[in-house]
Length: 340
Image (cartoon, rainbow, N blue to C red):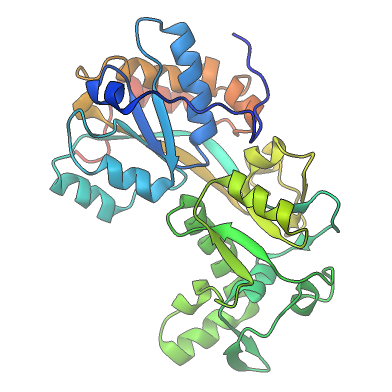
């Protein structure tokens, strides 16, 4: 097989008609837009190499939406796999069980970084989590008092940053990337700035750390990274939040920022030095084993060295290979589930 570099405009998403999907002679997958390109690569390769099965359907929609679809029930009109850029929540497992979905298999496919990028011709940025908290928080601490966010430019936030208006395009709340952004960036910045302590003293908790300003300086993006890229093309002052792989496949359009002095790359994510990274997963409805043709073979193929290893096409696209891939392969081979 040969695998070509995929771009936002050139990546073909696997799709067939709804009628064929309902026939359930194929694997049906939905969820994370971050995992989408990896699942698409695997689905296309699976269709080429396992000709006895139709090519799997791969759709996006966000981690939360995918897991919700996954947990809606069992049967031919429900998806087989949910892609996710975060771990499934206990509340979501409870929802699955309430709908009769049991025997959930968690498969970690590797790691990805969250990067902060702007127009290729714009100035360089060197961020810290504190910068992003001060730029986007609804309320901040100024001279010891909690006030509505007054900052209009990145230079207002940190004199070392360019004097460019704050205009951030961030993942919407249905995306797993948003949760990682909130924890690793906003909450971390809130704590380091001292605001967390002030919020707790005033309100008894720190939920204000992730409350986003609503004056238009921060815009939720409910679509995938291609929508964020389009926003930056239309607004040269914009700053977007992307997955590392998407950035690496659009370096001709984007300039990436450092975070806490570290440039995001597969190497800095693999060695743990880049501070904003996360594991990627998909979740399998094992009740569909033996019912949906090719489901088990697809999972085995996805986590094979050929696909998910450090020299495979997923790594070529930007996935950081899981150092514990062999254990994942063993768990998949044993049909290990997380809820029994």
